[in-house]
Amino acid sequence: MARLLLRRNGVLRHLASVKVTHDGSIKLNLVREGISENGYKWTVDGDGSSPVSSRDTPESKTKSITIHTSGRINYHFGGGSIRYVPCLLDLAHVVTIIHYSIPSVDLLDDVEQSREEDWICEFSAEIDHRMVFSFSVLPAVLPAVPGELGRFGVEGLYALTWCAELDVSGVTTGNLPEAVFTTFRPSASLPTQTIREEYVYLRFRRAMYANDITKAVADSPNSDAITAEQIEAMIQAGPGVYPPNNEGIWTVITSVPMRIAPRLIVSFEDERFRAETVDLRPGDTRLATVRVRFKVFDEQTKRYVKQRVAIRNLVLDSEL
Image (cartoon, rainbow, N blue to C red; front, side, top):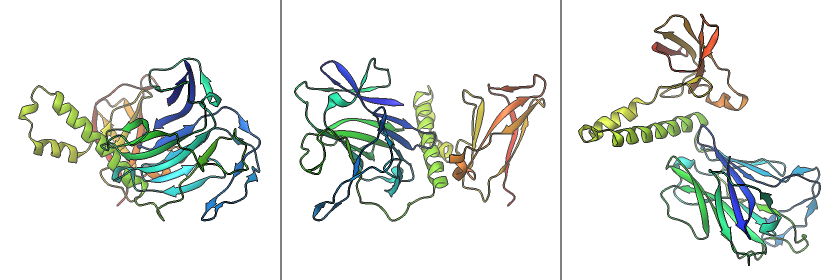
């Protein structure tokens, strides 16, 4: 995961980590090592904050959030909760995911050495008070928002942005210890998810494919001879089959969701090869009607083949 680091007085501190998954969803971790034995939770109403209460069970100090491309947001802490926002592919404005209040930058976990994929934000030595960091999703084309420290873009479609807020008045209740780390989840939510997972998965993969086609045409020495209609036709044809990844796993994408999880039939130019379907992971069953993955087994060597091999024909049979 890419890390969001803060540097103050020459010391790197770990604020958060971000990762984009194969379907365009964003995983956000607000990082702190260890387990918290004590804690507080409260809700805010029209008359202010209700009384705080001690945490019932120990909880990881790292707070994990999954921002699904479909707009479903899972907060994996504090008992867990789900919130719905517009599909990330359909965002029209900034949507705040969470506010993270820290008592001091110096209380974050220190980092000995940075990595190439890290985002590093410089902080003045004079800033040693409580700060609030806001994490939001927005269309990638929108300009920087006030206080923006950086953004993590996804295929030029949408992005996760993080901002620093110096005005922290009213972000904690009066009877909370000064050293607490606090998260605030917006209460605004859509009543339901606006688009099913399998549909948004196909939209995201097609958008990625469109980006690949556009780049390939731009890099082609014959780009001037390729018309806009030809480019659109290539995009509409869709990717179909993706070549093997580092683990030798091929991916087949349907053009539309199928009735049931399809049966895969593959014939190769060399008959010593056969396809073996890769079992779905528990979290991927929702994609069973739009995606099939397989590995190629060599009957002669009795080993799996990780490089490309010639395919004569491929069929997805859902028994229509």
